[in-house]
Structures are given as C-alpha cells and as structure tokens.
Length: 204
Image (cartoon, rainbow, N blue to C red; front, side, top):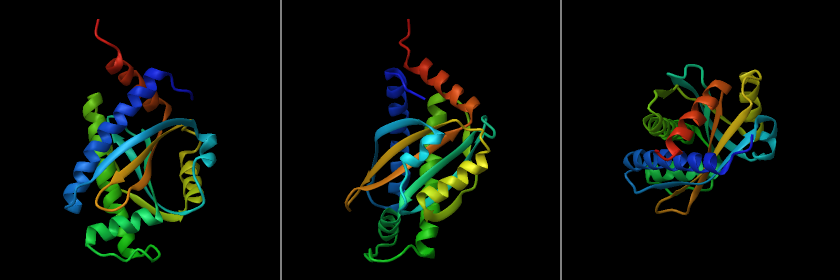
C-alpha cells in the first residue's frame, strides 16, 4: 500500500507515542534512562517483506493482537543479536559483548519484547480509544528471513500489508536498533486508518 502524507504523519505520531511509552517501561525495568524514537515508518505489501529483512541472526518476539480487535493479526519485535546482548548486559550489569545468544539472552529478549509491545499497544489503544492486548509471547532465534517466513505461513494469506516502525533506543551505551512490525488483518488495518484519519482531521 502507499501512504498519503496525512497517513504517514499519523503513523509517525502513533509510532512515537508508542515508543515513548515503551521507553518509560524499559527505563523502569533496566533502572537506566532509555530513550526510544521511531525515525521512520513504512507500509509495505507483505509480498515485499524479503526486501526489508536480512539474513542476520535475530531474536523475533511474536504476539497476536487481541482485545476489541480479536484475531487482529500479529505484532512482532525484531532485535539483531548484538541488540539483544547489549540489552541483556544493561539489564544485568555485565559487559560481555563477545558471545552468541544464550538462554539468559533469550529470557531477556522475551521480557524486553513483552514490555515494549505491551506499552506500545497500550499507547495505541489509549490514543484510538479501543482495547488492544498482546497474547503471550513466542520467541524465535533464527535468521530474520526464515523467522518471518514462518510467521507469514501462519497468517495463511489473511494479511496483505505490513507496518514497519523502525526504532532507535539510546541509553548510556551506543544506540541500539530494532524494528516493530505490525501485521494487521484487513479489518484492523481499515479500522486503524479510519481512526487515525479522524484524529488527524482538523475539527471544523
């Protein structure tokens, strides 16, 4: 799909509000100041996903979107291996960056993903005045394209578009990058844009 300027601005606003909530929750958990911004939002056809994900080892934390939008699709946090390790180190106060992802990192990835998505959906739901809840998370540690291929197969062709919120986290360590992917079913996509259009349309 192609976003018009109003839709792009609305999604950017939505992303930054969600990111601000997620940053507050992460700061509390990590006991360290965290800032999270969404410098870029993209809307793509699901058939183009392979152009936007790489082959690096990545932690993928997957949630179903529930609430008033029951079976609304999926929302996914994707964090490269180095991001997961840095966040684990920050959480535990260690400095061992030169390692593969281990069980400790996997637990941290699930916890961080859960906090990020819960806060992101809470902010989105509050803005749009609907109830959006994440399911319990599922974790995959794999090459990014392989992990997403599995998610797309589960969607069974019911999702046409993907919203990509590229995120940047900054703290006392160098910037940490990741992405939030929203794969809404068509009904939810239509509902989101209708409500965003209403929010962005100036009152007459």
